[in-house]
Image (cartoon, rainbow, N blue to C red):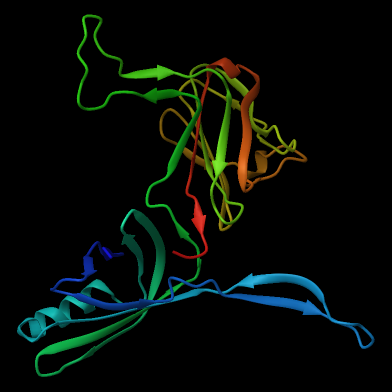
Length: 285
């Protein structure tokens, strides 16, 4: 089994744990389980109970391993520097073709000295217990799709740096275990009035009452802890315009499975560039 863990601290320090030194990985717990708190209610005369919901608990990851005695001070100081308390970090997990990541807060770092090998245990708390893909998936609705890649295929007619997509409609396959949020990025090539995103499948819509000027950008985010609409002018002036969300519109999520989405505008939609970015989420690895 080819297993490797990389932790990148808020200060940028990278610590690698694998089946090789300097930090030999003995075990990692808390990554192969999903823990939920099922909430029910019942009355005095009821049979059984009524299901009300399931709260998903934070995740506690514990990394255990060892390093050689000859590292001694450097080995200990490396762990302390890589996992400072009161700091965020990102845990990356690689196993064969599987690659996932999750954000954490450092809870505890313990080092036990011995004659030959020093052992360690690092406890991490993940308030959001879901793992995600390492990199975001990008879906272009109406945008310049990059096509420049290596090796370069030189022909008599040259090569293409990008291709303009104008369909305005895209199908997104949410492979997650849950509904997930996403980021919608829009840019106006010319004047665009009241841009929106429509879920064709269920009629949900997210649009703003706004006139975009040429080169202005609009960024929607619909994540559980980040629901915002940010407007950025050509000069770089940034404003939160959540109050411009149109009546009866909402920050909708991507349903599990296929989502057919359409970007549009009241006027000028042909001059609207748009793409969606998202990370699939998983209950365990």
